Image 1 (cartoon, rainbow, N blue to C red):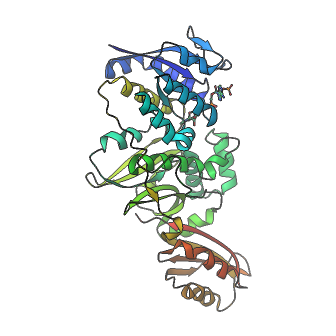
Image 2: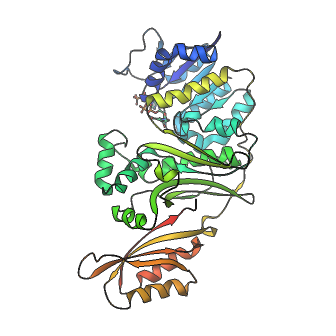
Image 3: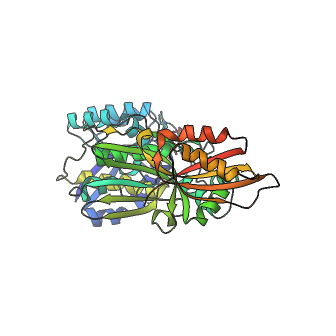
Length: 419
Ligand SMILES: NC(=O)c1ccc[n+]([C@@H]2O[C@H](COP(=O)([O-])OP(=O)(O)OC[C@H]3O[C@@H](n4cnc5c(N)ncnc54)[C@H](OP(=O)(O)O)[C@@H]3O)[C@@H](O)[C@H]2O)c1
């Protein structure tokens, strides 16, 4: 039987979930990995009424955990600056580190991996992306022989929950409130609904699959707060639904990296993953397209990812896996081509369709379909347009020209992701 001595830093949701899961699933872990994981100390600046740590040593100063006779520090405090300092100190003290912290990996990954390599220890982070739903080790190991061309998916459970409910007819604000009541969204939900959380995760996956740097250069990030329930209705009529997609795609040694709402075909795999689940599609040369879906948050799901890293660490035959320093160029978002969905609210006057169409024609943008929907009131009518692909750099001028028409009142748009 192998033994692994660990210290846990942080005593919140995930840390207490890990503590409990290591007890409830100890037999399972021993059976599958011949490993006994012993918690030597916990860094908790205060008690957590939801969990009794029993006889385990408690340090009120989390940095003191590093001084104990342990093999691995499990960083579960979250945030960036203190977490970075803690991980650096642990790695320099030649302790392995396991973290669930996407923010610190996204912002300081290159530095942290390089310090880990220098010290001959490992920094593992399976649960930083989609909690325990396996994706990091899948990309690193199981797909090691395959060339990955694209990773795309819904990497934020809160956004997927909100959009799935809007698909059923709810508006954005009440759905957000419901997500908060169910504990899926934080009291301040901006990190999720503005797309930052999903962007952190795709940045990490891109660095793994394509060697882009951490932090990545600036890339395009848009959240879900500009979407209305009617957009689902119009998208549905044309065979689409709306998802928040995070995408990393390799094209000719450049990387297309972005996170924003997209129309996806109704019969696609990602379209049918609803609720708070995360779903990822990985396009490879040897296996074709792979689909992974599962819970992207929660105590137990995250504990599962942390424990898988601990088991992995205990295997002395593990290969060196991080290729993070091999930076690749990010493609300029404005050089990409997108097919677009447009919702244009216009005056119900004769010739309005023609004047709108001519704005597209003047910019050499072809229209795949255009339809006038049921009037909103006596004066206003929605016009739905699907374009052919055109350069993102032409988008803003197109919208400005449309808004300059006296007959156009309001415009919304969503990019369409080819499947
Ligand atoms: N929750 C999930 O479902 C989930 C899923 C995947 C990944 N993660 C990641 O897991 C990590 C932990 O998340 P969580 O949900 O467990 O957060 P949490 O419930 O807020 O717990 C954070 C813990 O860290 C402590 N802490 C924070 N800053 C500290 C500092 N500067 N010094 C000492 N202690 C500090 C907090 O202490 P106080 O209570 O005193 O503030 C608390 O005990 C985060 O990186 C998160 O992104 C979470």
